[in-house]
Image (cartoon, rainbow, N blue to C red; front, side, top):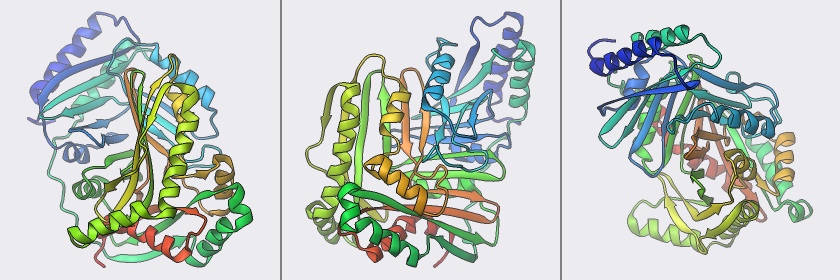
Length: 451
């Protein structure tokens, strides 16, 4: 463990030893100490206890790094939302502590096979969490006395603390040699799919399908996911940044602009993010492009469809609902989007699972109507999306937050799998949409490889 945070960890060790003399009153206990802040990604990259989790919300100066698990929920096969909701409600009743968070994600399509280790849904109550807010940091240790012998659980926490490594600076990303690239679907197939979706007969019943592409890039060396995420974060600071690594083999990282929802007690914040153009080379050109996006009928229509759908699904769950009449521009490093904020006061008793069921997958990553679009994607797209365009975030009694996992990458030994999608509506042009996929990958590709 070294000298780093040693006084804080010693304090936690003392608290753990005290716990072993006095039996815990609740089945989930969280111990907490304060510490000075430090860059969490460099701390996380140095650890070798899995899972490793990183979470940074879009709009605030706080982030989380977590390692290990004292409780996991992993669903490799099809899982029913009602079962998930039931498990989570049971879990919530096991403690009155307000700060307990379960971090994890849901696959894009929970009816089809997902990635190994990630599954259809995977949530973790971490063993050790570092939560930074501004310049202060809290180090948390979670204990689960429910299905374990108390002394063994305390010992497991002490062992985890003893195995914490001190942080080291992230190695600067070195550009790798590209050994090979393949796209699925390839352009010819993509063109066919876009033509099918834009056919008048199909389009009348299914006005929007979000088609995506899996780009597999083989490189000369192993890639540290946390270094890539740190660089990506530097280039798009106004996005969510998160990563999940359940084993050394695979890490899923994302720098996503899109919020699925933020819930504070009964207050809900969500958004319609759809419609895309590139950034300009100078402020004037940038503003012209932004104005053209606002004036563009196809993109405005696409955003309006998304807004309307979200309003429709939230209305039965809400006492009050308000949505931006007009879209605003949301700027990222290489592209800009149309964005409408949506806010709701939820009915009493509406749970996070009701929200996930209503909102995920959004029309911004699936299409409209949802079932028709999903079934087209399932049958034709040609690869398993896994957690790409899934929902990642955390559950907490008072405040839960999820992001839509777009602009994301699955990192494997000497390989990076990149994903990008485009909303196909009447009038979409296959080549222009293919180029949009390239634009969406530009930021992460420029970190990895020299072109």
